[in-house]
Image 1 (tube, rainbow, N blue to C red):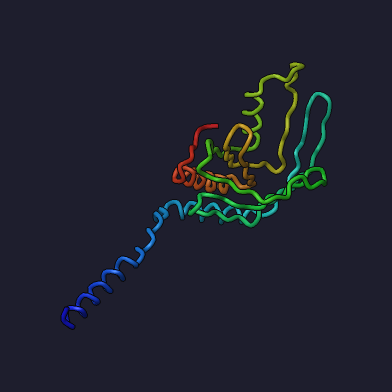
Image 2 (tube, rainbow, N blue to C red):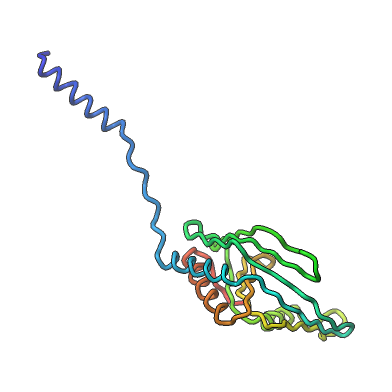
Length: 192
């Protein structure tokens, strides 16, 4: 083999082995749709803006009447469009005792229902579905002061989240953004 042929062979071998040894660039992950990014940003902004809610629940039933003070707060809300997950810290106090103080994650692709309604509407719907109490007395009633509005995000009959608001317009904005985000993440937005 002549010298120039040997050099050509070595050069071709080097080029071929280098090309074979190169790893192709990892595939780019699917781009996050801009409407999902916008919806998740709106959810994060609005939920972080709610702050601490203080309210009283007036309870009326056949045996008792009373007022129960409540406080609740969502904080550190992060709505991640890449994972279709909303992370937040939920704190709640009832009757002066802290009953919730936990970090929560809500996966939007598992959602089955999204609904925006007043808390009174929610309680009436639940009472109607549950039917009469065993003793036939349907005299139980709760009234929220100030009135609350919720965005219900239900995953199953027993699981999900209810985000509370004192501003109906803010609840409506979050409900609309949540519906859009759930649909884009592959979840369902059935009726409550």
